[in-house]
Image 1 (cartoon, rainbow, N blue to C red):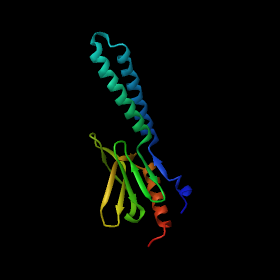
Image 2 (image 1 turned 180 degrees about the horizontal axis):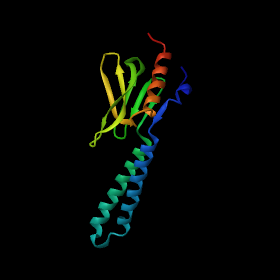
Image 3 (image 1 turned 120 degrees about the vertical axis):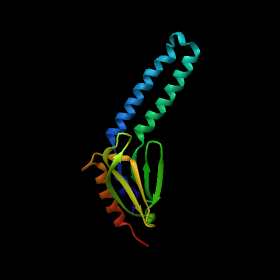
Image 4 (image 1 turned 90 degrees about the horizontal axis):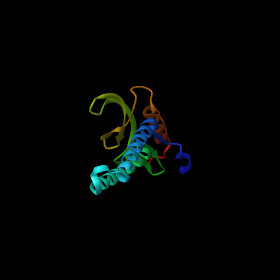
Length: 153
């Protein structure tokens, strides 16, 4: 299987990525003002504002480029905003989506779940979409189809 065939197997929640990335970038720009105009805070406030600006800018970049499912020739890589997991194709039995609750407010969302050959499963709550017919369902269908086309030992 050529790697060029798998380039289209990248799934991401673009709306969530872009909104969170934009928001964090905007807040980073706002905190940048504190670096150049500390007011009565002096040097201490400038240092805090500088650290906050750098941290928020790095988080904005990470959120804007993270959170996706990437299929490669060797396996599947699941990238969440703060975590990255890789699995070989031979370890994976299948993919499924399941309705569940996500977050502190318990929103009903569709979550990606990877089922393994050994019988275990791993849910990825960071990769979720609306309750029905979202990008997670499309990713599950495409990844299961890709899994079926792989040569089995």
